[in-house]
Length: 280
Image (cartoon, rainbow, N blue to C red):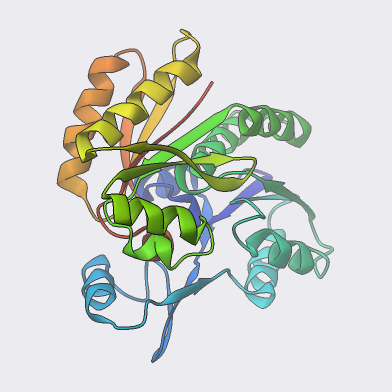
């Protein structure tokens, strides 16, 4: 067993097969409906969640794993690991990092390192996968943290929501920007910048918003080959397959894979969203 345990939460969007492949411990985000709280990815099926999201008058909220939940997880992992590395979405967008930090102070049996990815979904998930590969290669923790910091500083994630209903309800992007976009019937393009979501561009069609994402990845690459590109979707697998085909045509040297983003992001962005995440 590796002496370093790798932890993240479901907001990172790491595909289930990669969670299993690398033995990553995943802590669930919480989905809060009026009638109760559910664990992301296990409390409700994807079909049940989106059926409820569409029919509920009040949009549900999300919350990060609690301090107690992280503490229990850290204690369990500390029983047979010397080091625990916990990777989180941006502190500016979630309380996950803060809760994990408080939990780490309660555990003395192992050294616990926290990493703020400065990103969301697969921007975080790709950093988790980098750490997983390095752990598999028996890299030292200092080398892993150095690699993660470099990747954090050279990560791009862009996405386009298919509906503006949920982004207008979210504090994570300015409500004024989203309301204006709705009035003008335009398709906004969102980018993660300095750990926060910002409006990158406004496109006059859905196809233009997708093509603009591919162009943004090309600009970001600076004519250097990219090793990995994640095509992210929210309950839109068929559209994601088609989008991935265009991405592969533009970047034939990259490993392109599709990842479904969970309900915790779906609440804030809405079903149908498509995005791209990569690093250089």
